Image (cartoon, rainbow, N blue to C red; front, side, top):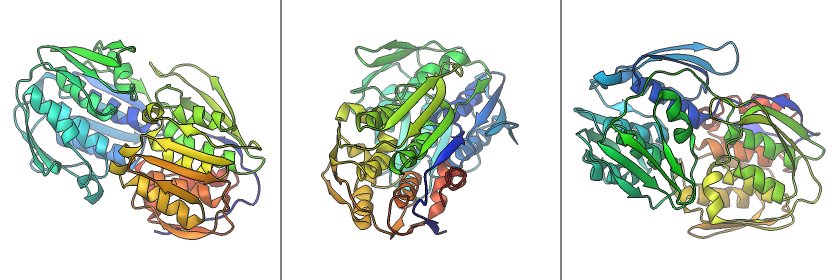
Length: 435
């Protein structure tokens, strides 16, 4: 499907509640499936990725009931397999485009007897899996990969506790190891080179599991064996989705938008700190916490005089999914905006680093990219173009934001990539005044 994104004819204004957080939705569904008893989850993101997780846990024996919520997202009831453990499905578990689904499932399945095969679409089959299978192998599980990629067959076993110094700051790697550690004897510790998102550490206690943390050493740990107990969880709005609405407001003259019930977890709001540093008008109003997650209202407005900045390597983990959006905003800023330490973008749903450079160049910007860095010169006069999303939801939304300041339409194909995280993105932009 081709989506034609049009230049803005006036300011964007209004209030939206972006969909539920994708990372928290995945974890809530998985932890509920692992738990003893029945969990009730509200505000679960209705997207292709989260549907992959819902389908996967059902195939593994959890009883899942999904209905359209009265508020935002899905209401999901999950009766977990608990101490019985997951069942062996009749066929492979298809994880769609969801790296979170397959990587976290590796940690779930590593400790249970049986053989489980995980697969995904062509994009997911290109993403690296050894970063998860290697530490889980050290714990005692056995994996057969396809040259380090999907399909992956997991043969579970009794696990050993592990102290693991991860070479990458990855919440998926960290979570897979911690989940596996719940059924190992002793303390399993993960130490990261930089802080990654900490939804797992915040959510596990709601399911009755204690998690230790030391901010100074960037370490977290669990002590097993430990069993999860059912819990009721409400999912806040996704800051990564909110970022694209925020970016649109920043680049369109005289705009001002409000986003409500957004998760304000500091490991996820690095993009807001960068926008403020560039001179954007950003205000956060902290509200009531949703479980262990701080939430609130984010208000973003257009500001004259945006200027370039350097996004340091130690900031990337807190905004890695928002780099495409920030690169678009950089086109409206004066001076050079540089992103350091962004090699992780090369192993996302696409090679995002190359795709950002190619797409912005096609739109008329001046961009330079290296193996792990990106520079954007601004201000740039953007032109209409036809761009591929490369089946990457973040790229599709970034090109739609870029179109708002272009001198002509931007055609984006395939547009349905947005279904992975924000199916209603075009409708929400239109509700704020975009064409």
